[in-house]
Image 1 (cartoon, rainbow, N blue to C red):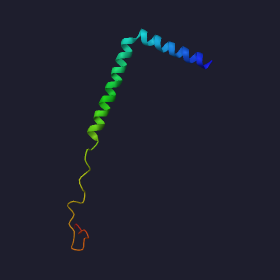
Image 2: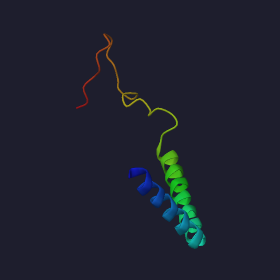
Image 3: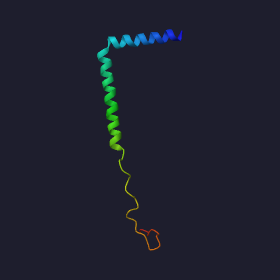
Image 4: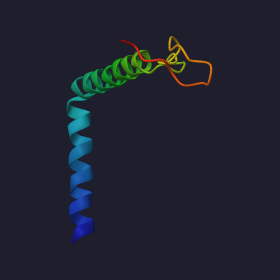
Length: 70
């Protein structure tokens, strides 16, 4: 029973693709474009090097304790 319904689904999908080949191709191109744009945006947002040290401008006293900023 399940095999028959899966076969019907596959046959229906193939018939849809044959009848609407241009639309399916267009949807595939749109999907691929969205994946590419998303990947490029992610690559741009992802830092390639670590953030600079947030404590780089901290002044230290002689015993190594950070000085207070008043």
